Each structure stands twice: as C-alpha cells, then as structure tokens.
Image (cartoon, rainbow, N blue to C red; front, side, top):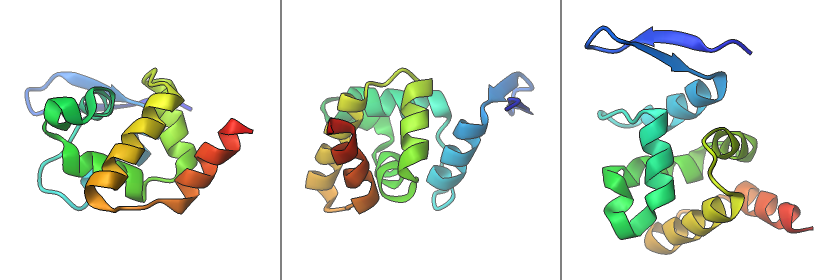
Length: 112
C-alpha cells in the first residue's frame, strides 16, 4: 500500500502509512486533541511510569477500540515488541477496567 502524504499546520509534509491512518482515525475520533503515530508509539513504549507521555486516554482507546490485527501491525511497524504491547494492555486494563477480549485472544494465540 502507498503511504498518504499530509501537510501539518506548519506546512511541512507528513507521511502516514495506511495502518497508521486506520489506527489514528479510531484513536483520535472521540477526542479534541489528536495524537500522531510516533507519539502514540512512544506512549505505548514508555507506559505508565512516564504518565503515558501525556496520551493515556488515547492509549486506552487504542487498546479498547482498535482491532487486534491493526494493533499487531502498528506495533510491528513502530518496532514495539508484542510482549511490551501485552504488558501495556494489562496495565491499562488494571488502571481502567477496559477489556478487549479479541485482543486477549490474540495474545493467547501468539503463545501457542
């Protein structure tokens, strides 16, 4: 798939992959403040010890609303280990009680 090109407010070009567009469309839809793909990936990597880098509600939406195959593709594209994704999901689940049973099944399937 071809990457889309967008212009930021400052006029600079920003390339966004199809996976990033789908993920960000879901993650940003309910909120006034929009996260970019790199910032979301960083928030997932740094986790709660760094306050989710200021993007906790977007991370919650990522884990609760994004389809598991897109979560996996996003993680692969941004070089986030699947074990880290699983750990961060567990932390979000403990903090918020948000559950994604499809994602949990994907975690279980990756162990087999």
